[in-house]
Length: 183
Picture 1 (cartoon, one colour):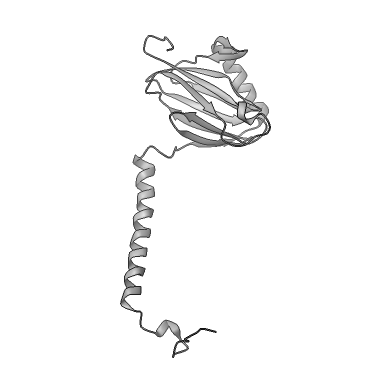
Picture 2: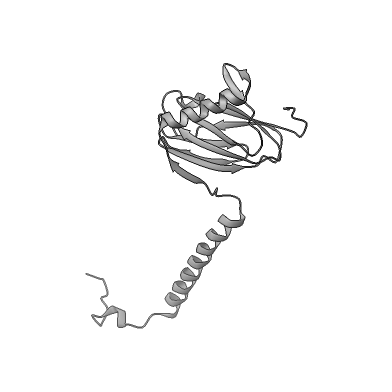
C-alpha cells in the first residue's frame, strides 16, 4: 500500500515528470556509451586478451610440456628447467601445486604462442609487472600470442588461492635482448 497511491490504477498511463524523463534518457545514453566503450576498449585497449581455449587432459598437456623441455632446455634454476624455444614456436607452461613449470627464456621482439594449463587445481597466471591475468583451469588449454617488447626478468604469480603453498607459487620468464643475453 503506497503512502499516496496514484489516482489512476493504470500507472503506466500517467504522465512522466520532466525530471524523471531526463534521468531515464541520461541513464539510457550512459548505458549505450558504456556498451560501445567495452567493444572499443577490447579492440584497441590491449587490456583484454583474446585467447584461444581448447579441451585437453592434464596428462596430454604434461606430455607436450615435457617434450618441449627435453628439446629446448638450456639450464636449471633451483632444480627447475629453463627452456629457450625458437621464435614463433609453441611454448607450454604448467600451473601445478605450487610451481609454474618450466621457466621460460624468450627473445625480445619475437612472437610466441604461449599455452597455459593446470594439472591439479584452478590457478591464476599473473605476469608482473605487465599485468596480464588469466585464470588457468585443469582440462583446458589457454593459448595466448605474446611478443615481449622489453628485456628483463618477469615474475609469474598465482593469483587464485590454490592451497597452503599458494604464496610460494612463482614462476619466471626471462626476456633476452637481440644478442641473446639475459639481463
